[in-house]
View 1 (cartoon, helix red, strand yellow):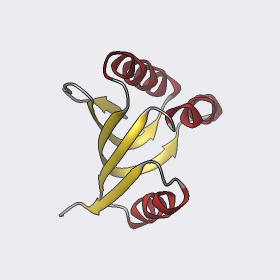
View 2 (cartoon, rainbow, N blue to C red):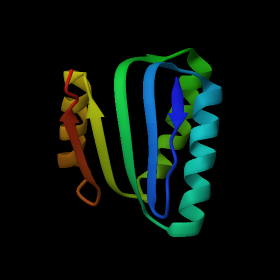
View 3 (cartoon, rainbow, N blue to C red):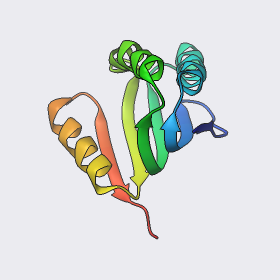
View 4 (cartoon, helix red, strand yellow):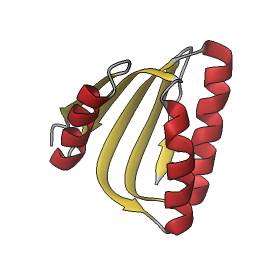
Length: 109
């Protein structure tokens, strides 16, 4: 499930838990692109709890097509997660993608 949260200006907020459907992702990318068109490069803030992947191949396909396009729309990505593997991936991406500040912290239980 993906839930968009109230966001203002160049700050884009959402929550992720469980599995993501193609519908979730289409809605997410549309909202993110709309905000980018008004404010330019965005700061993304996400809370990830018990993420289990993509619901099916169509959801994965949406992500794989849209995610590379975000590289030029994001200036900062901040995540709070209860999953160590997710935080590790964000830390690794922070080294690989130098023009975006990527940070992930542990969610207190």
